[in-house]
Amino acid sequence: MSSEPDSTSETRKLREVYPAIEPYNTGMLKVSEIHTLYYEEVGNPAGKPIVFVHGGPGGGTDSRDRQFFDPQAYRIILYHQRGAGNSTPSACLEQNTTWDLVDDLEKLRNHFNIEQWVVFGGSWGSTLALSYAETHPDRVKGLILRGIFCCRRKELLWFYQDGASMIFPDAWDKFLEPIPSVEHGDLMSAYHRRLTGTDEQEKLKVATAWSVWELATSRLYIDPSYIAHATDDAKFAVAFARIETHYFVNGAFMKEDGQLIKNADKIKDIPGVIVQGRYDVVCPAYTAWDLHKAWPKAEFHWVDDAGHSSKEVGIVHELITATDKFREL
Image (tube, rainbow, N blue to C red; front, side, top):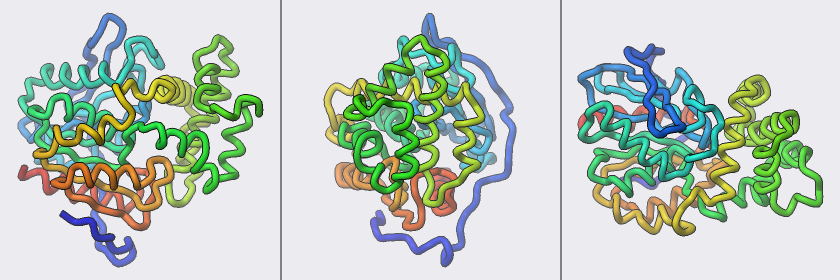
């Protein structure tokens, strides 16, 4: 176990993602009378099963997410959660809670006839991975988690009310623009009202502002091409913002605040790796550190020259190192 700071990317020989790869199987799995999930399988059909749990909630995946894993060693399963990406219906909030998504992971596992799998998730993906592992620890062979988010009230207030706003004041002003000042005391609720309203023009406007705020703050150095994903893809922005606000105003449907940290004893014997950007503004490092203290068996790796994004070079290095290590798990 290592909790010592890693050296900077300039002095390390950094691992890079595996070459681009296409799925050998794609499909749709009906998980309720409303929801059908998109999935894909990549890599070696006879390899070690690993499931990629995407962020958001509502974020979906892209082709690069397939490249965190050795395709010769792993049977890689990627899927889109309820309402996200290619899953249908898009942006649907009905029957869409953390525990529905936990059940969906079990439905996927059974669909693929997998006894145990490694679970890989970052940001909201770490929230869902932890929720799943604490509910079904016997089904989880290992956990690889990045940018830890446990959806505690203080984490949400930091990013959407008062905290990150002091580090990115220019981006924050743009986040405030669509909301009248009289409603600035509870911005998550103000956004949620508009994203669940009937004014489609306003819905798109606030969805874009919500999504731009998150993408503008996700990297140590602001990347305009990353932000463009929110401004150029209306379907993504609406699903992302609607589903996130739905979860966040409801405290991710946890039974109590801080539930995932408090219940970490349920995963105490599961091998794990925690990767955390030191300057992660979206999911600040104190949550990863709290999880580390509650789950000391997991390896902990600081990335001292990174923010939140899984695309930052130091974080890529640690994630690839972890997936390569878990080939032998």
